[in-house]
Length: 178
Image (cartoon, rainbow, N blue to C red; front, top):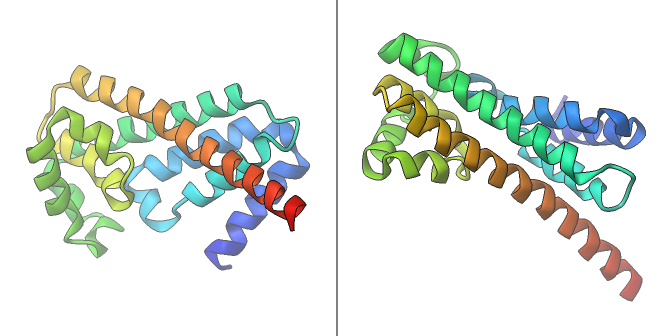
């Protein structure tokens, strides 16, 4: 099954079972932020798709937003813990072993940006998966990491959901005009 079909299936499931929106968004955000899973199944497009339904359905923004933020923060927390616990061995674990350039790039990024890099890295594809690992490997102070982790998770979750909502509203307006 192609990624596009999976995303469409998840979004359609949420459309039909809106009560599951928050738990599904939380799980998707967790997977998108967890170092190993995010490399296999990027979930950001499903999050945008679900965000598009928020304004066009009975799905409430706040529970979905909080679930997405908590899922993302927990995914990064677990990635940090994996890096802290397994250090350089994570580079040899699958699927990271298939992307040998990822950890050195993240290391360079974290070295340059420090704690603000945790916040910034959440918004950039492959860095999103690797930055928390590298922060753990190099033992970034735990609370510094967590403050950047949780604050960026709330901003990231809102950004994706509101972007989807804006696209939905723009498409509705466009079709009304055309």
